[in-house]
Image (tube, rainbow, N blue to C red):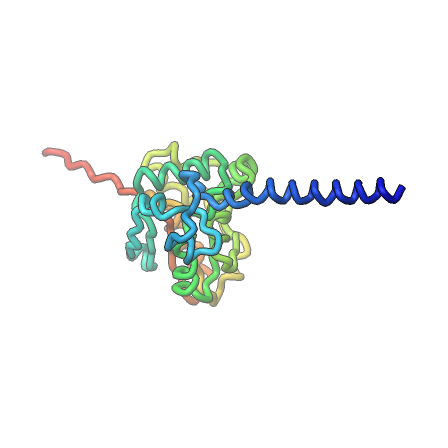
Length: 238
């Protein structure tokens, strides 16, 4: 009986060692870029700076960071990226295909910069209709910006389901009648940073600014991932 126990103990030990050995290469390969799926080089500058990077230097370089500052409705508006093909594809994969694993790639390289620049600010995300959040299983704006580990107050909501991508540029300006605010009094006297993924016509951000200003925040600024080019005005011959 003792011999049987010893053999069983030996087999358990060998089995545990085998599983551990089998798992090691699998665990090692999990440190890959979430876009191109290539492994990070052990001695790459990027991997040395980041504890667990999720986007490689090559893929990130295709985002074309611009850090462009605008004055919009009396507020400072910071745009991080050019609205190029790479950005559009990644945002669609994340937002339209519900690939929540991509949520970290948009801000990963600028987490420290943003947290320092907007220290003591409260993040207030642009609203998405609840039906879209329930369908994809998450709110895309909140999921991206929660990587900053800054306070987030979700006080905006859409009364009506209106997908802006299906609207014309001029129609998007009427969104002010759809976006509402609740518990706005909490924002009084605080530093507020409005955040969104893409600035298009500006109607969403404009509405948010107007609604927040009613509660007299201490400071009010805007941060968006990207900004589309606004359509050029047509000149009619007379």
